[in-house]
Amino acid sequence: MDIYSFNINIDEEVKSFNLEDKLNDYIAVQKQVIPILEKENFYGCVKNENTGMEIDIGKKGIKETLGSGKRFQSLPRKLKMLKIATIRKLPILVKRAKLIEDDVIDVHGRDSRFAYLGIDVDINGVLHRITIDIKKTREKNKFWIH
Image (cartoon, rainbow, N blue to C red; front, side, top):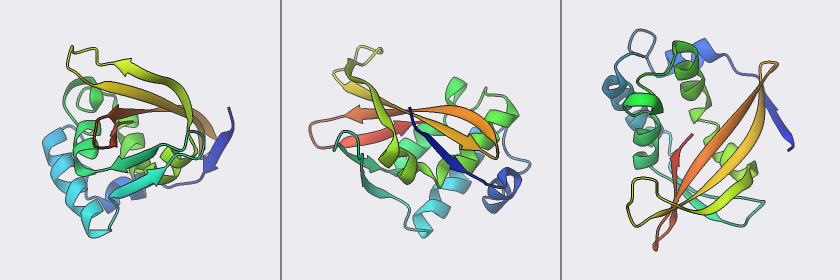
């Protein structure tokens, strides 16, 4: 898998959302991040260059990414900061990621399917594997979590 690389000041990204002391409160994180991204015209569709799949990055996916339990709330501080620091990079990550698995049945028993994309990312000299879950619906493919 190709490696995408970027340098980012993780502390500054977290600070740009005013989250330095709020990382343990996932609801406060959502309330800070979602409106800021909206003001930046962040939300919209991205075409994955490896599959041709159109993927909508919307508020629901960001809320899911920053959700309760193992999605965000119970992660170690370092991983929470990495999720926050890479949120603004999601369009390019979704665009360049490669398909890992497609048309996977929802493990929660609902009538939905998922595709999983993966991308290796060098962040400030440290290699990370980012997995991106895409919820497939009749209307559109939706970014769900990273």
